[in-house]
Length: 287
Ligand code: OGA
Ligand code: MN
Picture 1 (cartoon, rainbow, N blue to C red):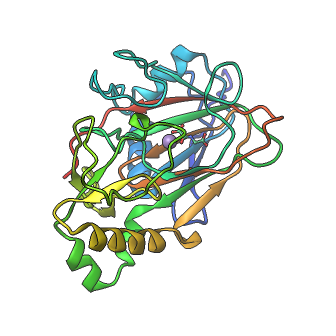
Picture 2: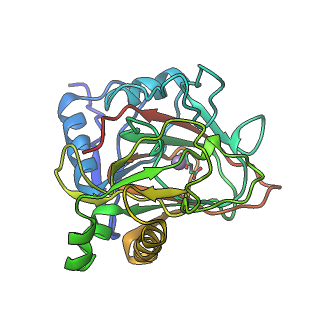
């Protein structure tokens, strides 16, 4: 009898408000249907999946990602991370070296492509080189953030629409506003209001669909009132009990649900190297 060397795929929930670790899976190979279904269910339940010890070519990384959906492609006229007019790389180098993107600074809590008409459903980030210290990524559970609001706030925000302004249209050196108070500044590009309270397209769970710092505007509210409401919601969002902080190891792939989480990156020492690759998957119109 030949010995069977099948490793068993294990999905272990983290002792945290979101996240599960997946071991025993080789993402460079084809994955069994029942395993894919378990991973999709685990993503719905835990919002981020952490795959350990992977070693993939770009083609293998793409083939693995496409089990979960097709590639996010922004509309031609909407700039996003790493896009040149009309073209966006399929795999984005998220790296502080060799012409990569996102540098070494803090990235405040956000959901990828929030400012586009059909934001990304999820992203996969694959770690090739990691700093000794710093550069951790945290993911925040937006369903928990919503559920822990008081009832009167939930009622007040139930039907509001939020515009999130595209940070890639802003002058990098201009001072940043986190609410559009001055309505007289002409808009240079179309905007895409989405529900502030979003329903997850698969789980049906309600989430507070709001980034932490990006410039926003609540449609139809007096600017001062809108700014106060958003400041209140952002203060509520930013609580450690809602998030999990990940210290990267080489070979980790984290696949997160942009429809259920925000993510944040800690700054790190520019003398260190941090080399990652990101694939973002297509999503649908938020409702
Ligand atoms: C991203 C991102 C965070 C990180 O790639 O979308 O926000 O930890 N990256 O590099
Ligand atoms: Mn991001």
